[in-house]
Image (cartoon, rainbow, N blue to C red; front, top):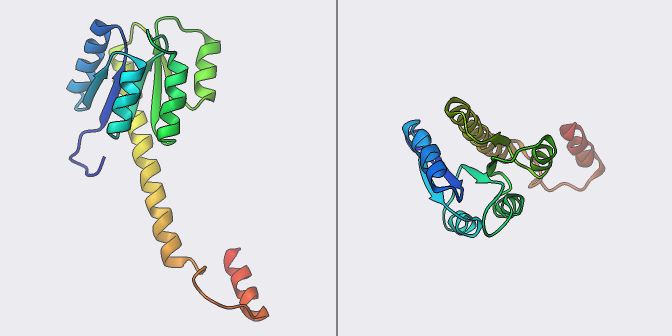
Amino acid sequence: MSAMTDKAKILLIDDDVSHAEMAGEVLSRAEFAVTLAHSGEAGIKEAREREFDVVLCDLRLPDTDGMEVLKKLKALDPDLEVIIITGFGSVEKAVDALRSGAYSFLEKPLNRDQLRSTVTNAVERRKLAGENRELQKIVHEKFGFEGIVGSSPPMQQVFQRLRQ
């Protein structure tokens, strides 16, 4: 999100059209900008063409596995928050998804409040991570000393003290 007035951009990848539309409607009412994709490849194509804050991806898709989509999405944007959704959940699958970089794992049928809450938290996490990167960059630019030339032993001691 580039400004506070911008809506967070959500990509929802689910081959169950009625479920995707219901979840999309819930998220749209919560002031998110939602894009729907009904296959893994369509979702990956959308993610290549536009930036999203959060992706919800079904674990079982007609053309690919949701875990593969997760890996491809993370390769495109390591900071992207991905929420895996499935009607065939298990603890093992949830753990695998989280270990592979998923933000969360939700079971169908989705609870509307839980969906809104999980997506809101994922958006906030992405926003905070971006702000953290920007602040680190500012601090590094303002207080970094890598651009200072000084190879004498006394200057090296000063640099060493500053690094501590």
